Image 1: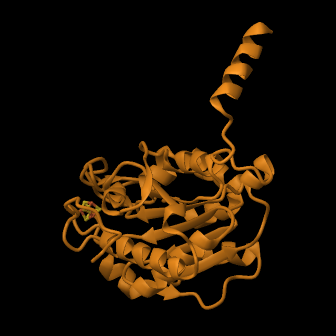
Image 2 (image 1 turned 45 degrees about the horizontal axis):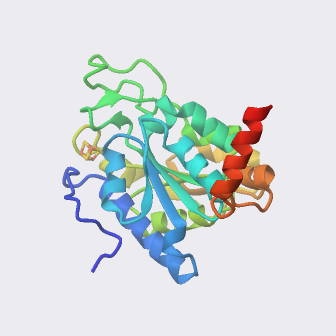
Length: 279
Ligand code: SF4
């Protein structure tokens, strides 16, 4: 029995890259459980889009967020209860379009959350409009003559924003993707796994990525080397580009405190409100 599954009917298109992401994520959770992580200490959130159905298909606690806001929601969850391992699922429109400010600031302050971006280069749920990672020339309902814009390089962007863990994966390499998810969730600090997710209905990239992804051997030693790997054009490198330690946002903000476990009593809160009103 798959105790990480829910009763929700799966409505992804057959062959969608999201299936591989869901499968790798479940494997990573199970692996981390065998290493001692408690399932009740994992919390998830998602934006809006095809990726967000992951939330419906996972039997884990969490909060279904808004378009582009899963990264902000995840930071709030972590600050409220630092014991949690918080994972935000996002689409590429979600993360690098509507939610780009949340991404940049979560990385800047080293918020201890994991962001998994289902990067398919389009808005799938609304039938294939272009996103910040669509290739130049991409034709869809909103760009019938082809997009005239160059795409974002999300890895370079997040490295520059200060992300302490940056990785890229591909659902066509499930074992590799599982490793990336497990490492990202274990990382203390902001972690991004940008996943090259083929959308078989509106941007089928299986053939392209099957022919071009290259697994990185070692993690680059310096920021400059990581940036150089992010910019490589001789194939599409997948693996960990950056993995460094730095104090996290909740440590800096709260020290060792856990607001969820140190809630003030009702009497104490009433007293505090009354005192504030007397001032
Ligand atoms: Fe997957 Fe694309 Fe179908 Fe959405 S539209 S479920 S991203 S294949």
